[in-house]
Image (cartoon, rainbow, N blue to C red; front, side, top):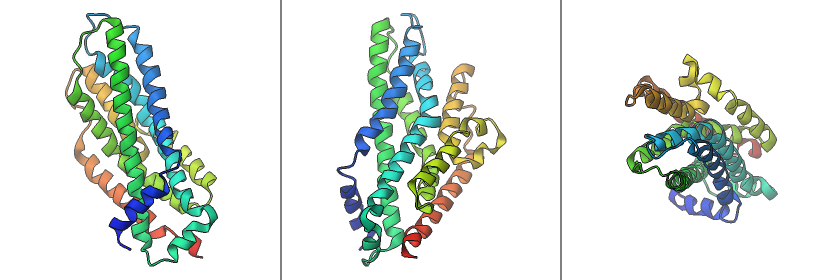
Length: 254
């Protein structure tokens, strides 16, 4: 069975899961609380209201809530095969283990994309309500919001690969969730050290921290440098994805 045929099958497997309601929780929680805490400081003469609200909401979201929600989604996708020994039945078919793993990973990437879309939509709605309530007439910076949301999505991909590889390596969901949680928690600490570039769990949070630096310093993309981040992130992503594809199904076949 080819990869292109596996994708719709994998989406059908998670069609009736509770993943869709789950990806609404983190954006709603962080945006409503973040925008509400800032909106009371706005005045009709306030400038840069949108960047301030975005940074306030995105910091906690990028460092913690987004990775944590992806951990849960990753386990839910993987568990669809482990229930009733479904993975053994799947592996008994003429299906490539690597192609099956990549198809599941693509489903995970899709839900990451959906969560970022939800984050953007909820943020815009909450921001419009906050600015209208406080009489702030600042124009909605669509390109600014889109740019940073796309950046957050792209920088989250290596973390996604790390979460997925750990989910594949550990048979017990409790172990994979626990280890991923332990790796997410120190992300904000590692982001403040030179080792951040080797730690995918802090990439998105570090990006938002850089946007905070740009906002307070009144500069443009001064803190976040693509080199040597880009080659390192691509290498980490490829390596972690290689680990997951080569190890997928091995423990079940023993």
